[in-house]
Length: 436
Picture (tube, rainbow, N blue to C red):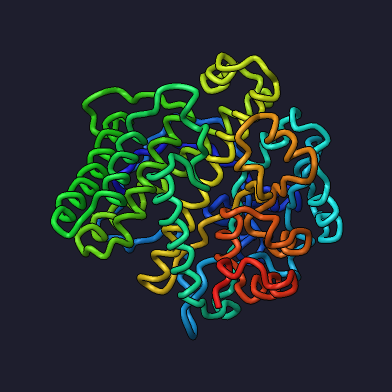
């Protein structure tokens, strides 16, 4: 991938091919069999091996893992799984014992989504399967036009989150407790300072200077991280833990959001150069978290777990802090993929499937300000730990007032007509979610 060093991974067959005992081409984002059958393609995480990836050719089209759609109208960049495929998809059960349930039907899934975890301290959110990404490829002829107003609404939501972060120190993407356990990494510290200046101190007289600071910060971040990766050959690679991966990915995502939608042509051009970098960093973040957080169910002696264990001895507090990191990883990965996919769809009419991942949708879980409040929110009702690409089931088990801001934005990226009908049938609440 151009401009970003990445580690090699021994890829196993995808879960669908493994279950069907069929040969897998191991292609990404989807293998050939899953693409032919229109199945969700998921790969298990495996141990890292040393390998170098050569930079891609200059001048390649801007894409994530592009699936070029053709036909009338503007193609939708991603769609939820069609009902006809429901019996061939892996669904996530909220039970801590059996999180991954193969071939689970929609009726059973609805029942499971309604069940709260039997014990939040069992760390239901650290199952290895919950870190497995999903991709789906649809026949372009089956993909309808997308309402660009809904895409713009999603970008406005993400910009509002970052504006809130700059003003209040937290938002639906970055939890208020995420960086309180230790020193704030310099990567995210620089992004916070730049965004606070951009959103709350920019005027017509100083806007050129502030834009230059945003651009320079982003370029310096990428250059520094490439040197740390050893890609420049000036120093050996520097290992990173999950928090370091998360901080740099959130920082670059923040810079991308500003530069994509500020309206300045030069900033947008510079941001486009970093699209593959953010995509690569988000994937590396997910792999690091899957390895770091899954170590013995969160009880292993990784650097992340040890830092959390030293901050508190209370099991409830430890579980809460582990959930905060895991949920921030998932939300960052999802937002990075969807945001860049939305931008590319608006810019060139198409984009590849950004991928799906589980996240916690229940309102009140993310905003809990203590471990006790978080534990109580998880115990009283299901936290709605749902696969992002199976939104139709969330619409059947929850009302608009029961999902949080992040979930509302996620729903915007799927079928808007289903979303409007869901809100209407609930009594017309949450008009901001669907617009007029």
